[in-house]
Image (cartoon, rainbow over the protein chains, first blue to last red):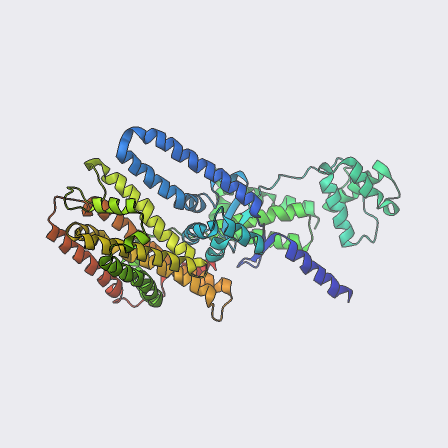
Length: 243
Length: 336
């Protein structure tokens, strides 16, 4: 009974979560964070800005070339309108300059790099997403779909994910490792370890508040209790006292 | 094994992979050893991730390994670029085959385009006022002046340096129309239907009216050449759009999203060919159709030849080779 209610609550959180998972042929579950409408709209605005800038610069440069210049300008504007994202998505790892600025990337829905066909498809269908004005259809589709896909993404089978650079080595607090008390459950161990790892992210007052919850375990309060817990955390991660 | 030990033991492999991914592959010999057998290194990495998850190591480590696996996965499963062979195969066989596979949509798009054009054309030919239902009087006079036989230039008024400008204009305008006709098909086919009918009406009106005022001797030689590629391409783009819309309206046994994906693959094959045809059309329209040196009979003959070429190509090309389970499908299967 207890078990079933827990699995249900887990699937509940999965449904709300923006984590996207897929299984590779090697039997590994890969996960990626999906990007929602807001960063994508911002990334689009950056791209729009760059594109307008190019067209404006070109218009000034070609003003002396008269009619042939206009021909080149029209050609450029055609390719910028339809193929600017395709070029970057295929050759630059799924990132247009705007997407790069927000560390987003377009990938196929099995998390492999986006292909020519998929990229062309999703960018041709921009026009349908744009209708009736200002990407209304696309935004509606993104907010209603589970993986934030606009119509073009549905037809091409693509998603937009965050491409995070991993942070090198978490700085652990400088306390001497201490052996944990006996009978610590796995969940408790994980909680202590993650408290230790997040020592640089949380304010010290909040950390002490959290540590005080475990006063029965450590037998200490305030910063002494926190240090005790961090010592246990380091021990659990594999550190030992220097001899 | 504690996490620290685990990390220390495999750190070297991870770092080498990370360096390689960041573009440091031109490093020392030790690095290239790991990279030279990337699949093996990748499998070991996958195993590390699985072990780390199983042993409930910290989220930081799992996130790092997940990131690393994902990036290697992307490199390993990258699609090879399209070889020129496949392009030629597509042009000489794949595209007409794709059209014939979707024949029902091509015919439907054809009807949606030609029926309004015919009605409007005949209407404008018989009735002087009907053209003003779709065009303003200024547009009509502009059109008339373009094709007035008294002019010595055809199409738009132009000097010799403006061929390139018109080429740019035709590319942007005509290919834009075709792309929109296709893209709006995803709205349950309604968009494609609208664009096909709209363009049919507009074109029919121009044809009917120009014939009525008696400029046929300049108008038809002008349009026949590039029309062979342009009008058919618009119809094909509409057919591709209808294929998308049909998948949403009637997905059959599949879920709508999967039906749409399949339709997308079919439609893309048509769109590649359509794009090529429209580039040819824009080229002809800018540099051939507008030429005034050539005799009318030559232009009509060449135009008629283009029509036969396009129709013959769509009907006959690519039949001799039995369609080997076409390569694009295998590639697409790789994505799915």
